[in-house]
Length: 327
Image (cartoon, rainbow, N blue to C red; front, side):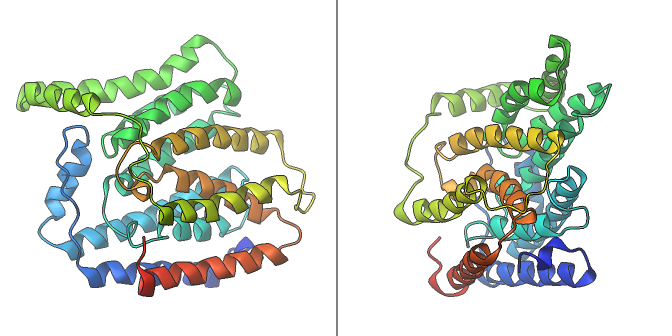
């Protein structure tokens, strides 16, 4: 199975599309409406949610189209940065699977909307590695991070990650590190000015005050089932990386650098799991795991045990979607 998705022919895309449709059928059947959060800190999500609130089918259809677009972007990022093979569809396969693991995830919710901006931010940051003049890429990375946080506020942590890993991606002056921060702050400046002119600025400020006053790290979102799910995904990923089971492919310094940046991103992804609510909706960890698993599968030598695990895992996911519905 792994070797199959290392290739890029029409049949691979057909299989991935069919898998995505099969995983999302329960969402369309359930007719479940989104939560309608209407929190001031996520205005882009609120706007889209209101526009689609006339129909649960419209919400799910929009979320599914988002998933398809995000899958294409993710796979393109993986191929462009040589994290997967030059013609591989491994990234697309892994991304669709991890972003549609459970019934909870096959809905329209803030993180699902923010993913597209998170991916664009990561892509622009990765691109700075070889550019002699990366200023515009850094500015875009900051802008996309801000837009992601306006969909799913904990994405704001990505601006901290960007500043931390920038010296790894591109050694330079303090000026370079300030560029993504400037792009980030510019988006919020425009947002606040628009609300000040056309909306209720005091209500907006109060919304942020209320959010931060109630903000705290906790384990309230965890239960035994999602802890087991996370362990089943995270533990094999770590073992694949440190088990020495690879094809001997010589990774370039650029690839190793971007994987190192991803491991640092994993720290921030783990932090978001403790921000309250259902941890499966704090899904930055699934983007990180998609990158690491795609990388490991693409350059793995002996794929026997990995194929067995992957087959059993896919069967478990489909069983949960159609029968157990535990998560």
